[in-house]
Length: 200
Ligand SMILES: CC(C)(COP(=O)(O)OP(=O)(O)OC[C@H]1O[C@@H](n2cnc3c(N)ncnc32)[C@H](O)[C@@H]1OP(=O)(O)O)[C@@H](O)C(=O)NCCC(=O)NCCS
Image 1 (cartoon, rainbow, N blue to C red):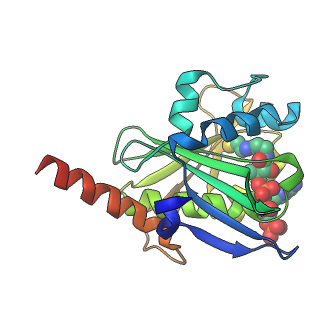
Image 2: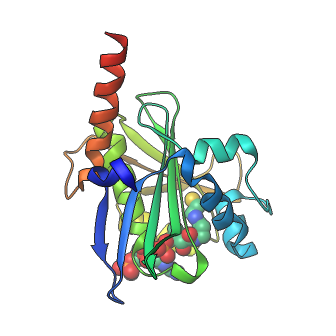
């Protein structure tokens, strides 16, 4: 995890193990690809809306970085026998910045139902808000009851998709003050400060 330690959210799972959420880096690309390859067809389709077996080089690059004003990828890991194992990830893409971003979340099949998806999405919202983004939105398959349940539990409004009956559009404003954000949200400030210093 290296220097990203200070931008992490760590907590204890019900089984006693420790889980950590942190920004993705290019060094994570292989683990991200392995996570995508390991998905069941149902989870794969729910996340990517296709049977894609692995990420293209372009998508892999995008999922391996965190640039708060553009796109961010957060990773959830657990420690197993002293090794960091990737069990989930969440992304947003700001388009256009700062009005809105699109999000998506994914938890490895064997780790679903442990609170990791909720924590990933909460950290993603905190980071987006800290980066100045005003609204977070997502497309969810109409039959995806776990994602719709999570979105509902987190205060998202669900509407009919304007173009397809297969999807619902979920969205929430990020205008209200941040609550319960982990140190990870400070990553946005640090990154933005670094960018400002580089252009000064
Ligand atoms: C959707 C997904 C991200 C949820 O992550 P998760 O770690 O399993 O969810 P959590 O354990 O954090 O659950 C958080 C809340 O979501 C809701 N939820 C989770 N699973 C649910 C289910 N099967 N049915 C209804 N609600 C559910 C509940 O409100 C739950 O809160 P609770 O445990 O207090 O009841 C995960 O199931 C997943 O990766 N699915 C495949 C990919 C996908 O669908 N991604 C979404 C694309 S936008």
